View 1 (tube, rainbow, N blue to C red):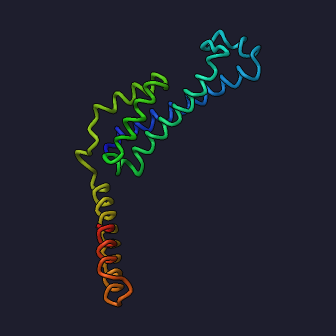
View 2: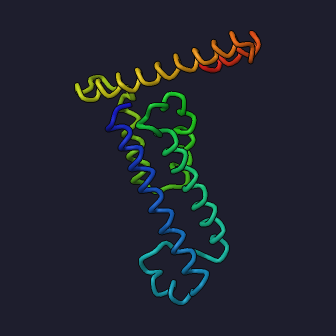
View 3: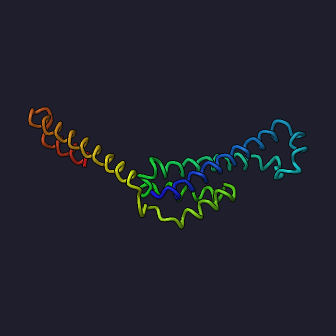
Length: 167
């Protein structure tokens, strides 16, 4: 995955989390000490007694949106194509419940391709090593399965099922 896109998405998720924590603190101040909130109210958005529930719902939704975004770019974006539903869900939730800075960052990230056009030689070697390691592990597991089948520990059907899971 493109590092710029991944970093924009992570930045949007983190900024949204900070925004949600700030909203939660403001709501708690309102619940605990309305007079203190009234003194701060000049600088803050007005919260009425009835809208306090909306603030808590917004905070929970915003946290869920940030978690969806972070999950979508897990392991350096290796599974981003499989996790695009989490990305879209996080995007929609943050548009509805989040602040405008994460929204803009996510909008910008949409225009960045999610594939890497050119890797540095170090990144290429690292990716090759990871692929080789994964392939060697699969070969080792297949050999173990084959040996178990030859020894009669597992049946042909179990062998085929396990082989399909590996591949």
